[in-house]
Image 1: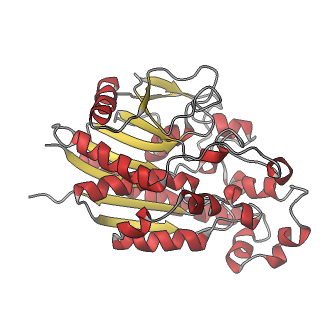
Image 2: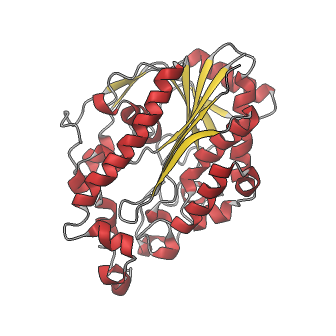
Image 3: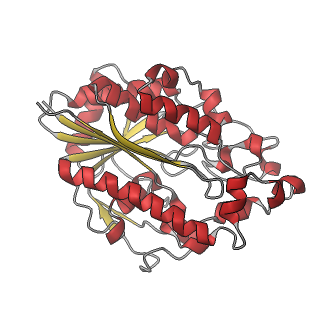
Amino acid sequence: MAEFLGLGLTHYPLLAGTDEHMAGLLRWTLTDPDIPEEVKDPATWPPLMREEWGNDGGVAAAARHRAELRDGLARCRKALDEFRPDVVVVWGDDQYENFREEVVPPFCVLAYDDTEVEPFELMNKRGSPNAWGRPDHMTFTLRGDKKTSRALADGLINAGFDIAYSYQQRADTPFPHAIANTQLFLDYDNAGTEFPYPIVPITVNCYGQHAIARRGGLARFAEIRDEQLDPVGPTPARCFELGAAVARTFVPTDKRIALVASSSWSHAFLVDKDWHLRPDTAADERLYDAFVRGDTETWKSVTGAEIVDSGQHEMLNWFCLFGAMTELGMTLDWSTFVKTDVFNSNKCFAVFEQERP
């Protein structure tokens, strides 16, 4: 019988950059001419946002935010090393990387061999030096496990859960950064270059109706006023079911499986109702309270429309994790919630450890 560990963490891209650039998304948003000037005025911002922004555009607060995130990542890595997994299964969103106009599946198992990944590609495009002072175009090897990936897809399909799979990365596009940054941040001290565990990625169409419309990312209000929305992504309940199905597929094996949700929670640049200025903290705190209590019914009752309204698109990865942990009867051992208004997204970290006989 398989043994399991559950982890939740962030893949916040701006953590890979320097403190001076960590509030870059907010700075970019503040230049949008279609956002009313009064809401861009720091005098109108909530206390936490004004405090983080300070007199330096968030630079000093960035160092504190980085320290909190590194603490959470270190806690997750410690649990991972103590568990010694055979494979790390990661649910991460695809932001116009493999999922493009030709095909956008709800979920896809990436059955890849070892892959050379350029982890700083996003930061290079944003003009930010990387936090490690490494060469801009450094690569690391993301170790794959094609055999396990193929068996997982085969098992899911045979069990009635139709899932896409991929044997090859799309040419001339970035490797999904949700997956790459999982390795980068879990091996933070070495900039991802010495991560010893193979990864089985499951990419999720978290961006749904914005997957192509906004190319899985940032948009000015002028661009979204008349946007043609895409079909919706998988529902939160279906993501919960996928997590459970993945767990069931691995149970009969003799493997040690780490199951990982990789994403921050609500993202400011997706919260249209608040002018892309800050995450929807109230919605996040509601779900975090239920998460800590093990209240699966609250999570399973969330609709896709509610997810989009709160900019919680990427949290669908966490619905997969929570579904797996519920299926396995695993309860939360440790978690923390890192709240921010300036650094684009609230972050959550979690560790689920299986009870030993």
